[in-house]
Image (cartoon, rainbow, N blue to C red; front, side):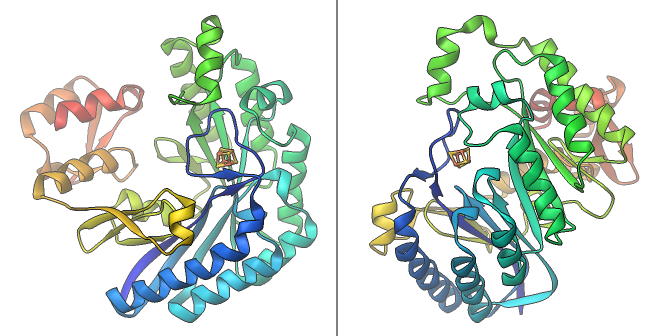
Length: 361
Ligand code: SF4
């Protein structure tokens, strides 16, 4: 039986965060009972198309999957089990927003089979949470992590953001330090990307002096790497740190270009060398429309993806795949190093990752 990973998109949120350009719809959780049967239909169609599939990992992302009630999560996981073979020890992650979980829901999610929680904290600073338009406070975020641990989750992750408008180095270090004092096994650190059309874009245009310069942002990355290392968290991908053995198995499938099936509005898939994406219109999705775009990858596409994704990770890329003269120049410059047959990015290389990637493509 073919082994893959499954991504399930839950595109509902309490309200839209100021920086968000994900496919997520605020204030319409009453559509969830209409949405879950469509996910089931899509899984049925996928099984008919691809044959029997075994799942090594499942990732329920969003949006805000923790808006599902305990019963809805049980229903969703029941649907997954009916359509696929869940492998022994499968990693089953749900994303959670601290403003939407309590002890009872956490216990229900555990019972439904969720064994990893990825909590969107973003910052442990209330003023920055306000700037981001998050629905929770810093102490609610801390309590959410503690409640999840109390509920028995022993594989817990939080997302943190840096390069926020007006964020000081000490605010950033405080967020990391607070996370490191919590019972977490995994921490993701993402730089804010100001997307066109978001309220955040208008905010920074009105307050350009609050934007951080490149040097400050690189210092924040260094602070994160240092503090994480001091606490035993290893940087296994450019934005992700984990205690040994707690790397996100699901995300590693993306970075290794393994096969994954995405179901739900706006979900993306890579199956048998073809990338395809579902409609981003919730109305169309609920009406039964699915794939909106698909792309059969060329050899060049595969090479570029392999380099771009591989260099983000600690695993790196097979050196024999890379142009040898350019690789040697990057090694001489201290941006890459060789370990056995693999070419890996150094700390200096990770500061200028995009330029290194461009050099090798
Ligand atoms: S909770 Fe996540 S998906 Fe929802 S609006 Fe905020 S950033 Fe976007």
